[in-house]
Image 1 (cartoon, rainbow over the protein chains, first blue to last red):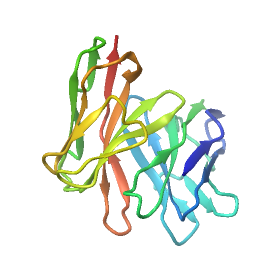
Image 2 (image 1 turned 135 degrees about the vertical axis):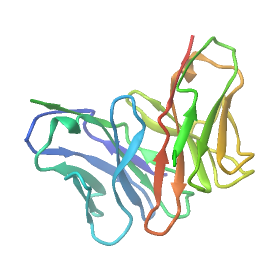
Image 3 (image 1 turned 30 degrees about the vertical axis):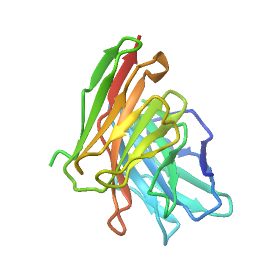
Length: 114
Length: 114
């Protein structure tokens, strides 16, 4: 069975500071990994994903995540956050052949303060 | 192009009442899913469908039923609502195009069972 652990439920940070949101997964098969973002009172939006190839993936708004197979991690990073990055972030995992059913972590609430 | 829409956006039920949540998509995706989101637990899969006329159980199916009579619609039913079903419900579809492998989420339905 697959599972996802997001190690921090809340991460407070000041504007323009760097941030890392941690995600570890467990799986006995090859995985696809995702980060979704949820702004207040909205649905989830895909931030970035790892399917294959380069282990470093980037989003259009400056986030990046690195797939580390040996450490079974997919941490999300941004070198300089903005107030508008305040949201809840979810890490999710699935695998090929599993009808793409996503297993989600519990979420990390990122609060960016001025 | 509306993407994934959900009806209603909010609903309050009394224990024992029934209701149906409607998910509609205009992206011609085969796979559709129903998740529930609860604080500190992320999203959990209730039921899913891999095509018109098919449904399958997810992680937390008890107390819910689903139907996929048309490709574009996926209905979630609660026959006898319980307070434990108070949650935010999200519908999602999956783009199976190679290189996409992405789920698209609706805006959610906030359900309160008294």
